[in-house]
Image (cartoon, rainbow, N blue to C red; front, side, top):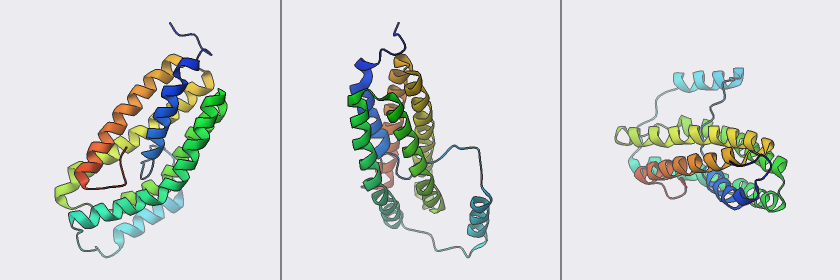
Length: 182
């Protein structure tokens, strides 16, 4: 049984999983139950606008890649800060950085959600978005586990996060992207 507060052995793995989860954050989907009026208005406007011609597989992959590339700089900065917090044993800072990654995911999620994949890519896109939503949930639970210094839960969430990152990476590869995924 792992004692609460005795988390030093999991820091290396924790830093690795946040690095992977942070890099997977671009285009992430939020599972937040709150909806703002502006988000609803934006979605309504998008559905009433003239339908654009269907994208080819390559055009879709390029658009998704462009969205992911824009998120890389901020995510790499958070990853570096997280590694420092992990090295210092600063659980509160690590939890805060997890939450920052989730906040960054919101605008990317909104942009990715506006993309309409070709019919041939719909199943892969759904897998990609499902993994994104699950990763957001993992980061939320990981932040809580870090604040509680619950080493057992942190370790379990590392495993779950790694599984979701693998699923997201496979979907991203299936979609033909070069900058999204793991």
